[in-house]
Image (cartoon, rainbow, N blue to C red; front, top):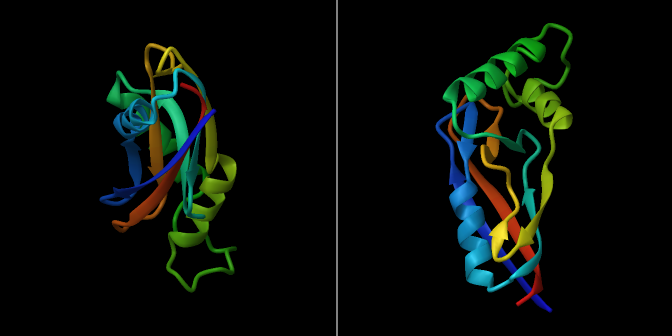
Length: 140
């Protein structure tokens, strides 16, 4: 049984989806695991993780637009405003998505579908440095 953990910093330029599939693949490759599981965990409460289509950028734009309409910045009823008008909407968006994803590893590869990619979904307006943890476990 092989186990390895890697922390990756994702530098965002503000709200949007940032593909981290390359970091996922590199982590699995470096682990030497042939068959197993990789768990990806985002260490923040105002961004999240998504597995989503990585072929058409319109998908990412539409997702971002949907979430901005669902939980817009500056909602009048919000009481948590100490970190700015985009912080509580970011927490709501993160609560509706996920901060942890598990992906099977088959024959040394992440078992993603043809058009699937792994994304960090930044919900804040300003640039941030986000920490993502990859934990790989399996048979070499």
